[in-house]
Length: 273
Image 1 (cartoon, one colour):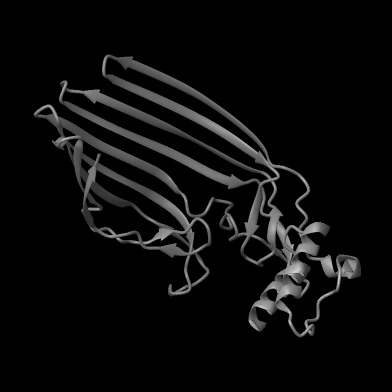
Image 2 (tube, rainbow, N blue to C red):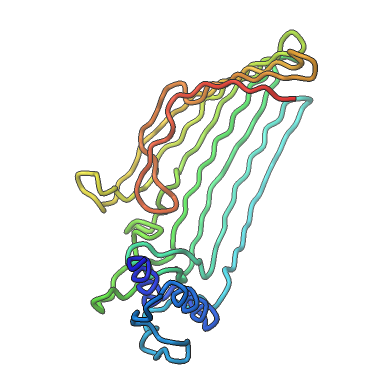
C-alpha cells in the first residue's frame, strides 16, 4: 500500500492532463488509502501551489483531423479492382509522451500519406484469387520539446517518431494474397499469404544497443481455413491453422516502445450452430 501511495502521489506531482475536479478525485483516492494520515500531499485542491503544476501538460484543445482521398473502382461480375490514394493531416495531435514520462501532451501537427490497391478475380464460380497492398508513411511536422526533471529542454523524439520524424512501430508496406476454393456445395478452403516490411522501432532493453533507433525488415505469414456447412444438423465445422511458417520474429509495439513476438503456429477446430 505504501508503494501504491508513492506511485499515485508521484503521478500527481508530475501531472497528467489535470483539472481541479480530477485533482480533488486523486486526493479522495489517496485519503481512502492513507490510514495513518502521514502522506505529504495537500489536504485539498485549494492548498496546491501553482509551482506544483509547473510540469503539468494541460491539453486544452481537440485534435483537428482533415482527410483527403481519391478512389477508383472497376467491377465486372464477381471480379473487381479498387485503388485509393490518401493524404491526412492532424493538428494538435494528442498522445501519451513516453520519453520523459510527461503524460498526455499536444505533440503538434502530423501528416500521413499513402496508397492502397485491392483486387479480387474469379477464375470460376468455385475458385477466386484476391489480394491487396498498401503503402503508408506518417510524420510529425516537427519534433516537440519537453523539460526533464533536471530542467533541461529535450527533443521528444522516441515518443511517436524517430529523430527523422518517421512514425514508429507501423510498417510502411503491408500486403495480402489469398485463394478461395469451394467444392461439394457445402465445403470451402482458403489460404492467405500476408506480410509487411519496413518498420521503424526503438530497440528494447534486451538489444545490444537499447534505446537506439532500428528498422525491421520483411516478415511473412501463412494462414489456412477449411469450412464445412451442416456436418450435423445445423452445425458447421471450421478447421484453421494460423502462422504456418511459425514466424515469431519481433514486431514493434505500438502502445509502448519496444518489441513483442507474435504467437507461433497454431491449429484449431471450431463448431458453430
